[in-house]
Image (tube, rainbow, N blue to C red; front, side, top):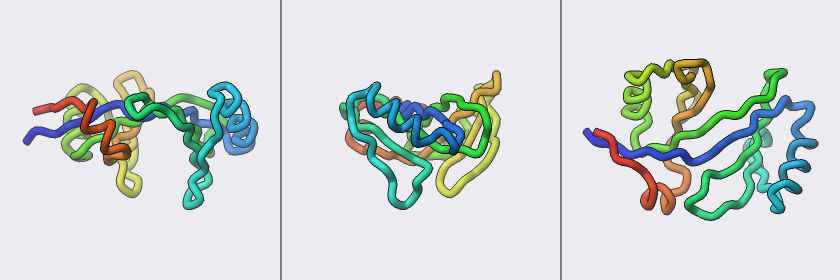
Length: 127
């Protein structure tokens, strides 16, 4: 069955002890105010045009900063299966998303659709 997906977010994963400094830096770098998730203080988003990849910050317990991508899809399991065939591996299943690593070890997440308008306009269809 066909499903659709698109790159929707690029996260800068920041050690928790540096998170507030990173929020201030990226707010000034991007020239916009952060939007904090009251339900999950480990995430901050920055406003972008609908078609753009959303720049976001995430506080993590790891000591090393890194960047990871989010792939939004209308069928998480089908996208995980497609990416597994391409050489990605599943690291963890968390709530409604799947953490994976690409063939060289870079982390990324497969998530449910976050921005329906952008998804409908820009997602690719996969068989």
